[in-house]
Length: 172
Image (cartoon, rainbow, N blue to C red):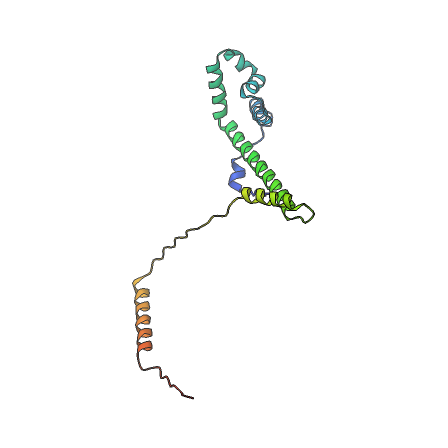
């Protein structure tokens, strides 16, 4: 199961409960109706009957009224929250299905043909890991450090090419 950790900034971005504000409560009910599967026009007509009576029969004005409601700060925050929750639940379900397919593929109690089919399904649908990750590191090296490295390189070259190392070959 996928765990979704929420940051404080994200929590602050969520809308607060309406607590007695009838308009905001209607907006909450509107979003909940949309999430439950009602059409936007049905939800608008049921929850904002006074507004809907004024625009009923004019599809252009109805679309504009719904658009204007959904673009409001409070409703748009609720829609974003609902979308995140639906997205999390969807991936939780996918994870659960892939877990069951994996269990079938790895089970020795299942026929080989079913196990191979499950393994094939699992491998086709499990998310792929990124093939390559580029990491770029920029280092600002000061001139003194560069000079010290050049001196060490020069010292090591002289040490390797000079007569400082005596090697004696012994024949047996």
